[in-house]
Length: 542
Image (cartoon, rainbow, N blue to C red):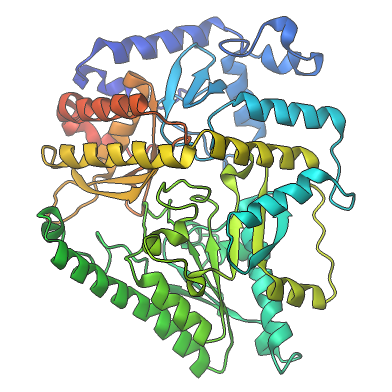
């Protein structure tokens, strides 16, 4: 069956021969059976014997094996416009088997950049020594735990649990919250204290385990796997100040009426926090117990949502007054990505003096922690950790905190500091934000620019007044950026119309300039010529 490719039918409308040449070149190489030993992969002699068969596969065979033996539930990026055969990376660049070099604006896992030599050295060295579990003492795990805790100092967050992924981290965080309620409850045997309620945010994503899926509307509302949320989960509206229930007046914001903007932001914060306050009251009135309130520091799949300024302060107070704990999910946005602060939960009060009242009770980290090596963690207080231990169930996770993964974590933190990547995120992010705001004055399709540092969202709309999501246009722009300008982007948000910018933290100003110029050229030159056939496109999976 021929692979559907919506870009090819639109070639006649796109104002460049380069796009046609790129696709033609790919089809030619695909047909001729060029092997996967290409750009950045080293010579045939460099490849271990155990991998020689893998690297000798031609692209067609790779696709056939993938299609036959890997579940169709596992999506492929750009499946509707030519999937990518990525074989190597360097800094903010990814290289495919055909020799194309792509600018990566979307990969927040390779925090320090793809294939960073220091991380390669650290992991290779440790793998040549030993890789085992945490029941044996090893300096990598002990030192990494200390360095992670130091990033929260001064605060009561001082105990670390290593895990392998963000899903595992959030799953364990909920388990810790439950243990804390059981331990501190006067009715330890009561069913209610062993089934504490959780308050989560609409459009959130916290993982793929059953427990975390139950608090992840982004996944929970897809397909027919789930019919209703569990009785112990309450979902409150996403604090989206652009198109949510309590949006900020964009005309005031764009006209620099700062006093009005602050007033509108405070109104939105109060209104959105009221849903959390109401949920706390309802749980109490029903004779139930609140276990936790969980929120991503920055909501990525929700479309890059950072809450209005006093929202978290109000929510945390309501939750703690109701006896619950606050879990900050920093899996997507931690380790300086927002530039302004180390952790995204600090963003709304980063300009204030350190306030331990706003410090989470539990923080989860993941994705970028190992720069591509599976590594995640839960950081919590001694009280909560002790409560968990008091229940008598050992926590053991075979691969969590292994020396090799911890070596990647140590190297990542070293590079984050020595290469000043947080400062780079702030500087380059400010340039991107200012550039797109300037472009917004000229291009009606840009409805909103939001975020901080290298965590930005461009929300594209068909009409600024109605805010109708420009889903087809967003997919088209995303695909043409890939095919014509060799730029990889990410599309998210409830309306599939937000381009999420979350590149490796080494993303340079030169990278940003090329991205901004290419984006505007697609909007000006290519999009108008394809507008009559956009309904053929659908969503571009990224």
